[in-house]
Structures are given as C-alpha cells and as structure tokens.
Length: 173
Image (cartoon, rainbow, N blue to C red):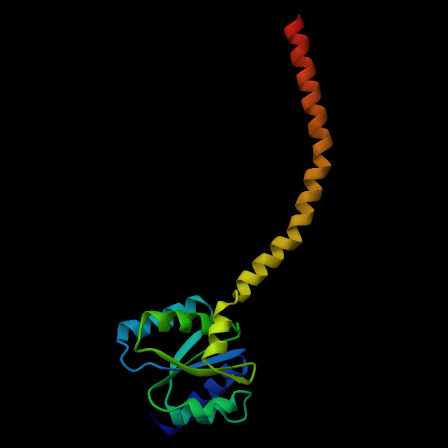
C-alpha cells in the first residue's frame, strides 16, 4: 500500500468512526473467506460495517477520536465493526461468535466508553434502533385507531338496529 493510500485509508476510517455510536473489535483468525463475506453481508443488512484492518493504521485512525481508548485492543488479526446504530454491530458480532468459534470479540466502545464482552452482550440483547422506532410508532398510532373505532361505533349500532328492525318487519309481513 502506498503512503498516499494509507493516509486516505486512515482519514476515511477516522471519519467513519467519528460518525459511529459503537465500535466492536474482534479477532477473525480461522474464518474462511466465505464466512468473512457472510459476516460483512450480515453487518450491511443491519446497517453496520465490518472491516479487516492493519493494527498500526487502525491505531492511527483512532487517534484524536472518542474511541482512542480502545487502541490497546488492536493486536493480532483484528477487525472492527461499527455503525451509527449502537446495537447493530454488537448484535451481529455476538450472533456470529455463537456460530463460529474462530471468531472472538475482544472488546469495544460505546459512545467513547470502553466496554468489555459482558456489556457488548448486553447491548446485543437490546432491541435495535429500527425495532424501537417501530414500537414507538405503534404506541403513537394506537390511540388514534381507538378514537376512530369509538367514533364509528354509534353509527354501526344504529345501522344494526335499523337492519334488525327491518328484518323483523319483513318476517311479520
């Protein structure tokens, strides 16, 4: 990699990290190319990114960011997962670690605070940002639906009364 390419990589990674809510650092030694591609796809499908990084370049990218405290996690074959959704990288990483023993979560950071594996697993157990949004919309829409059903009910009762009365008149004639 040329020096200009390295500088460009560092600046792009730094920008990506600054726009992220969480970063998960993992060791991927022993994963096949297909497994790594599956992990990347799962991350993308959940709104996160997964990058295999050179430790020295990753440490340079972390400098002067809120994630500088995790630079000590970068040793060995290291990869990072990050997203502006704080839950997505941890959820996908924890699920992937359960499937493949050669994938190990080393640690991470949430909004600049260094977190360990237990906190990452806790984050993974929380609903994703999209799930929370869907629940919130459901809560907001429910009262309007109830009001609409209450308002239409007296008219429905009147229609049923008239219908039953007209049926009883037809039967008596």
